[in-house]
Image 1 (tube, helix red, strand yellow):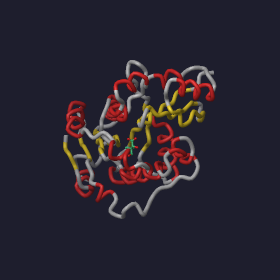
Image 2: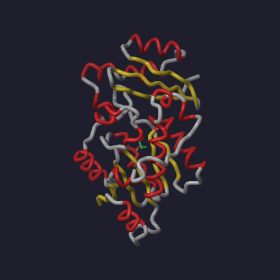
Image 3: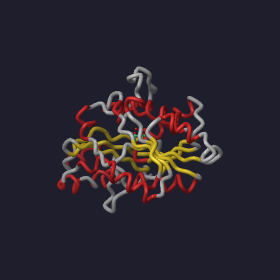
Image 4: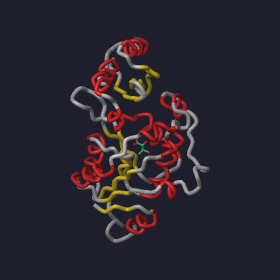
Length: 255
Ligand code: PAF
């Protein structure tokens, strides 16, 4: 696996005979890789001739500085996992290069980004959309892969790609869960043992046939601090905290 840190080095490689007419798949991540990320890489490898993964903990999508500071960083483990998965390239950019203009230019969506997670994390989606736009422009892939656990993010990225006529195809991939139903997330590493035992209840309760109001009550009784339970795109979404750890999940609505 080749590790590339500079935009100009990747551009050179992308236009070289090694990659020029090759179908390229791209998996953007913030590291702390788990089986959910690995499933995106597997999908990309199946559908493309080459796969590149990026690891970049994007500061502009954290509306809370402490959250950014505490975000899990496991680079050596990540590199090992990427090698085992047969990833071709890892893009590891530097914040100073990605944000040379200091985030004075941004991509902003004014409808979907204000709902659900956007209502509780002001500015979060501006940061996420901006970095994804930058990465898609840099990497110049045929397809980019996003997990459905962050379904609102996936819908926004899909909308952005359409609105700005981006060439890269935006491809969703199913949420990967632990055996007990908990959606895989880098943030799960932040749960203490007691919280980890409670965490699968988010999926269990969300997946029941109760109304959103009843789900909110059940989550709160199960010691979650529920931010929202909402329905959209034939799915039911929830965000709930265990202590300081914010968990999100979504399921298809059963009729
Ligand atoms: O879903 C994520 O891990 C991040 O939001 C992304 C898409 C890598 C952008 O920083």
